[in-house]
Image 1 (cartoon, rainbow, N blue to C red):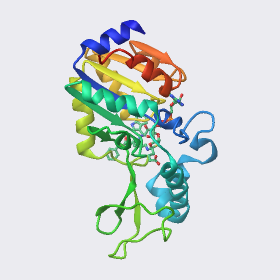
Image 2 (cartoon, rainbow, N blue to C red):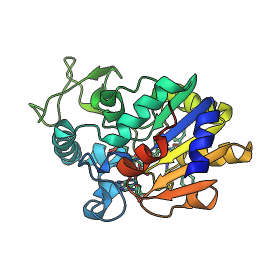
Image 3 (tube, helix red, strand yellow):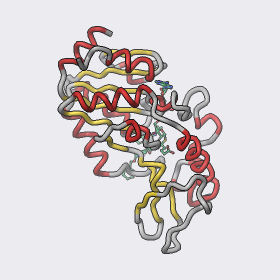
Length: 240
Ligand code: BJW
């Protein structure tokens, strides 16, 4: 751990990739693994455009349930340390697959939300994107002023990621000296390819996860334990 702290003290360009595990200790279930969201729901029934076309009500009920959990959640020690890191490094990009907005709530600013945000909706008729914070939504599925059906502004399987965010994520992976990969199973593309890109360029990849993942095979170092404990430990004494 001391060696990694030394590295964290010397590098200047840092990227972070987070997944559901970073919010686990805020009480938000992960997708895969024990208690994961996919254990009780089939992704193809809920997180695809086809599922939404077939049964928008069912999909919205799932998102309404998740909104309730997220609305009650607060950033944990892992989110807070990542926000402090941003103040320390001259070049810092936080790439997240999470849609819960907890990195912003913790004070992070340069955040790339690869899979969208649960507090935004998109009108299926006009394509307009707007903030929508009703918990629970007054109407399910909610509708736009134009009469179109609103969908959560998140990225489902088979859908393209938002171009600007994807470009920012690849640019950060291309430029960073070190990437911290926190709480992701590393199986969903294209996000999972970012640490591989860093390693191919000769950069350092530090993983924090409760379990071994495919990224552990290529990581320079993996620290196994809950992010809200491991990240503050790693950061101890770095920014003095
Ligand atoms: C802790 C912890 C603690 C627990 N501390 N750690 C190449 C090969 C094969 C397939 C594909 C491919 N390229 C694309 C695909 C298809 C697909 C894909 O990747 N499928 C794989 C599953 C096989 N990808 C897509 O479809 C993507 N789109 C795409 O590629 O489009 C191409 C295209 C181009 C042009 C036109 C059209 C199309 C889109 C992917 C969208 C993913 N969407 C979701 C839902 C988002 C909305 C929502 O939240 O409802 O995103 S799925 C879900 O998985 C969610 C997550 O962001 C994502 C990643 O999950 P994550 O964050 O890693 O969570 P978990 O649960 O998997 O892992 C948690 C980890 O934390 C575990 O490791 C735990 O151990 C750990 N942990 N507690 C630290 N306290």
